[in-house]
Image (spheres, rainbow, N blue to C red):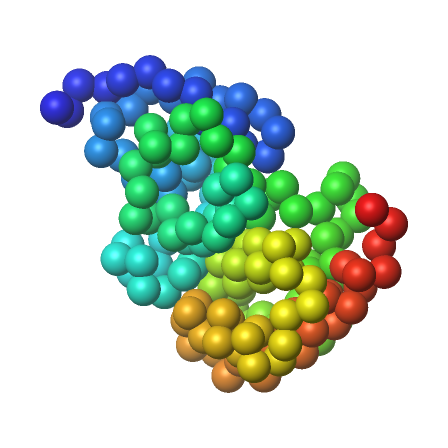
Length: 161
């Protein structure tokens, strides 16, 4: 069971050949095998949301799934948000609206918000508060995160498709 297996992860539009034990989490594989360290590990129990990535466009806690389960699927991490030097509207809004302090939870919030806003751009404030409450932040008190996500939602609607 501890023998490494070979598989491929498709992350941010690029294929990564991985050789790892079948029980390695997606979060650990992203960090250790793909060298994408933007995905943070907080609680490693799926509670905090710091490890949130998009799997086929849907937010998932990467600490709760095995990396091999992501084979054949599109994984998007915080490193995949910006386009070259141009920040994603969420990244820009978090910066402009002070939606981060220490930054540890920020990648998870960015990926959670990207997934929900791309799927449902007209989410109500109450729905947005509910969704954002699933991730934990110990610094900001959530108000600036909420402001940033609202601003990003407006900016994302204005972007050409």
